[in-house]
Length: 512
Image 1 (cartoon, rainbow, N blue to C red):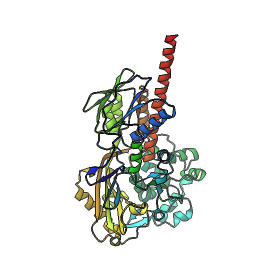
Image 2 (image 1 turned 60 degrees about the vertical axis):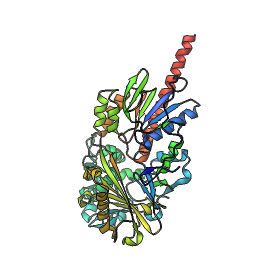
Image 3 (image 1 turned 90 degrees about the vertical axis):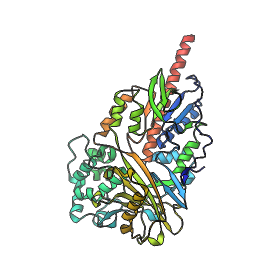
Image 4 (image 1 turned 180 degrees about the vertical axis):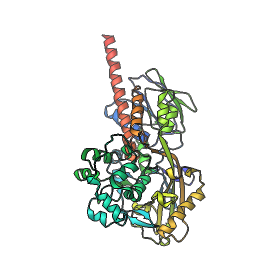
């Protein structure tokens, strides 16, 4: 039951989840009804965790996942065509954050987990129209003087500036600052321009000059606060930053599945209770109703639930929560997003002059290329393209090009091909191409994001049967989304079980 998209049709083959009508309202103590709004990785992880918790306790559950689109998975989508296995969203996840690995194992996917290939151990930065390898352990603090001084990425002046970091005083203010300001303050402008800026832009697609360092790089802030230096903190904790290379770890820093990321979506949907997923069920608003909530859809009658998890982007969550609290929508709307386009493009291997021996390259904004990054997909993971071909995955847009999703397919394919050709020595047009637009898909954690999220959580805490989850609040990667969804599920489970125990206690007292 693959979640691959072939041509223009979506093969979901989900006979167990075909938009069933909601069941009859049941008593709270018999079967609590919980709604999860949104069937991206956050919502599916949340529903899967809820089902597991109730099964472990031997308790009944009626969980419904309401998704406005025609397929689950959100930005995670895998398409197979002509022998090319293309990722339209994330192509992998970090091993260093355990949530995705743990969920994959619980979902029975451990045999399908794969790491990056041995040829994908390098990541490159574009400089002077050429690819310069970023040595592992060079940033944020060099693991050795040899790694620093043997690298051609920085000038001698820039290298010497980086070595001063352990001797600089810690920052005096405990308030938030931009990631750009932090890196420049600790390591110098050259290290920021040539290394940190392309890395941060590749990860967040936003502008590091306005990106909150406490939200985007909390570990580095903590090291400065505790040890007075990022370099000293890394030596004490032996903590990799996770931004480049494979770190020598078996399988690399990244993992995915032999049949790509859609495998995880398929497994989570298959593991939900029968008839729990409702596609094409867009939520209009949520409002309190008695001890629970009433959920209004754009079509159909309102539905009542004992608890609700909103697993939508903050911009959408702000629209559906207007009936709950007047301040919540305004605060949620202050979390902004950037849009990206993913262009998968395949070539004959013989038409690519440069040997592709890494996982891909990042582009500093100063180079003014219309793309942010390129992944060598068929090098990074096996089975991504036919023999004697290469599959490349180009990401464009972000803060540099906010209108990227308005461009037509031909224009985007042209931008990708024209950007790649001089760098990789491509001698002919592509054999394969696939354009995917992800509008407002990546949250931009502006300076002060942590304080804003705290105020949002304070508002939501007045409604114990409500949780917000997703990439808007504390991490944009797949493991972060899974953690957010599972924490929301655990909070709702605690609320439901405590409320059930209180109801039973009240009944006992009345009988007595």
